[in-house]
Picture 1: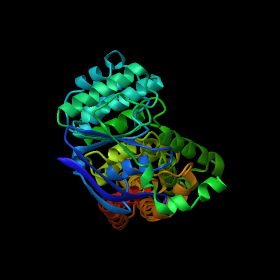
Picture 2 (picture 1 turned 180 degrees about the vertical axis):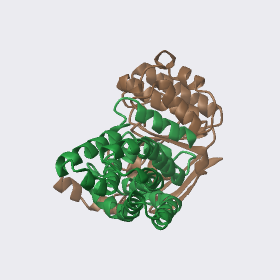
Picture 3 (picture 1 turned 180 degrees about the horizontal axis):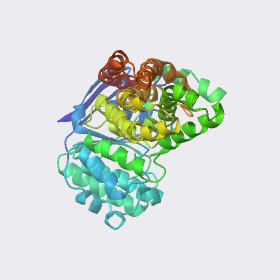
Picture 4 (picture 1 turned 45 degrees about the vertical axis):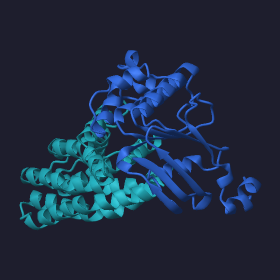
Length: 205
Length: 218
């Protein structure tokens, strides 16, 4: 099982943003995408997750092995923490949610409606969803937004355990996670030529 | 998929879920009509099938924009689209949940509301049967409209404009069946047409809804 991306070009709103992207990710490894805001990290991740088609290039990934976590956590405010997690466990056909509750210190909050959680607690719940999916490939978009130092450490522990179990993680993030074993790919040099020459956005917006 | 259905039903029951919204709207329409047209029993009895069907249709329309928009806003639609569930199954479950929370209560409550409209005794069974056959089509067509307008802020107006013309055949045959029933005439032809429309849209539209949803999620 591996994720291989070759000569990938992606577009956002019909405008090419990144082109010629190549990388490989094998089981047990993590890759962090870096680059300035608006460069197209989210677009790359959505393309790999299968939510939009690539402009060109090839992605070899069995989508049945992948789970995606976006900026939004997909939580229902009126359902409790436990109900939210149990729903995703049922959708992905996996059993217990105990490991996920423990992994992100949510056990004390399990009966609380998700709408009554703080931003950081919501994010922890969103990340705990990854553990109940049981999928080996994690595609994460800015997973550490609004997390405090302690919660980031929790997240890094979860990623390390996931990698040790033969999983993979591909993530876009700005902060230094302290995840030293992860490879880092700066997508800046892959900016699409059309996007480079055309400064329409900066001039008019 | 059962989990998705149960989650949607649970969400509808919780605070702010919109369960009973359609029913309350239906009740208001039906109680206001006698004030508008006057309390003349003969006139009310004559327009009752049409008004009851129109009320049910508008009550359905009221909650359509909640079917997919809420899931799109909080990001769970993206996560569902990348989950093991096929999108066709997701939209079918969404339509089913909408029917159970909106269409089914209307079907069950319609005999009570028919009393307010002085519907002749012979018309009750055909009315309930016509709503039972017709409201699933309203939910499925409405889900298609919701899939078309997902991602548009305040897409409710556009959704109504798109969906209302598609509701016309269901309304014609549904109201016709209820009218013929009230007059004691044979209801077989409109009933078969109504059942045909429902069966057709349930079989075909989920594929169209899933296809437009895929485009809209890009």
